[in-house]
Image (cartoon, rainbow, N blue to C red; front, top):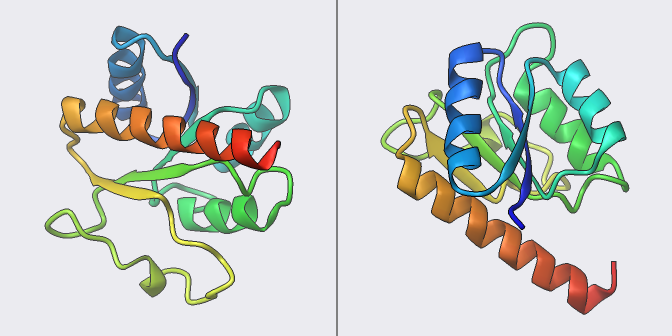
Length: 138
């Protein structure tokens, strides 16, 4: 069975594209177009991983990420930042979040994504997260 992935992106076309790529590779995506909607989705069903855009209206992906990582309930969910704000495949997240107590995202992928890289990244992070949960018993 594939991973449960929550896609948080305000652009419907991007979210649909990521969801289709995940579905085509045996995963179960859920889409949220805002931070509020993402919180509702989190409360309904805990995903194995979150794909998060940074630039969103009302509440930015950065603000949502900080809330997520400061929450005891959701802090262990791996997050892949999928955004166009970085340059040359790099994102200096500390430019957005200087608070060292907030861990860095597990990965950054630049839009437009390369599907093969996206799927490999998702599968690798979910496998690592699952192994870590088995070791810690959580």
